[in-house]
Amino acid sequence: MRFDVITLFPELVESVVQWGIPRRAAEAGQLELRTWNPRDWATGVHQAVDDRPYGGGPGMVMQVPPLKGALDAARANGEAPLHVVALTPQGRPLDQARVRELAQRSRVALVCGRYEGIDERFIEAEVDEELSLGDYVLSGGELGAMAVIDACARLRPGVLGHADSAEQDSFTEGLLDCPHYTRPEELDGHRVPAVLLGGDHGAIRRWRRREALGRTWSRRPDLLARLELAGPDRDLLDEYRARHPRGGARSESDD
Image (cartoon, rainbow, N blue to C red):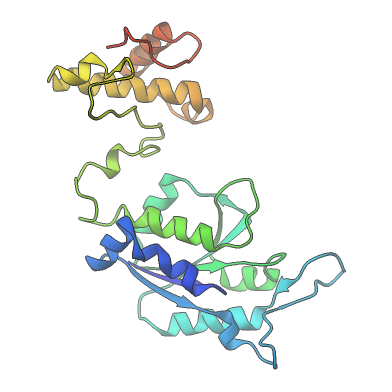
């Protein structure tokens, strides 16, 4: 999978493949990253890529010609079709389902806006979809682009150390992940749930599913409302609710 990122700060975006899972994906040949700086297609002494907005108001707006020049260069530098994504506050919220779809594509271009935004004519003519990390404003689209790259890298074949790791992540089935524990077995009087120490893998799977359902119910009821739970899941959630009527943390008696 290849990402072509249109950005005024290529060094920032390129750092995402220098660490962790994205670096492993790049070294395994599962991820390629190219950056394209619109300033290289800007004209004038100062290589300006922005100008004042028509209609007045604060801030500056990114101009179409430098962005289009960078995107055209990216399109010409490869044979696979280029799916163009702009990172904007107006975009569809990024979720795991969309990440899975993007991770199946051969090439994705990520356009990073700056200043007050991007000239709408570029969005209308060149962009296939807009994505947002959430309902807040960042200084530019670079952090959003890096998040998309990292999230997709995790789903590329063979990148994670365990084949089931990605399937057990939060949001994979629309649920938050269950709690996790490691050594020591007891820490400051708090013990690991006994079920995780007993070796009964069926009981462990049941406990993890119950905790995932319960954690989603208590922390992200909006996610749970989107799901149609099967009978066994409803029973597990009822069991969790009986143990945690206020949606609080587990008690020491939890198994």
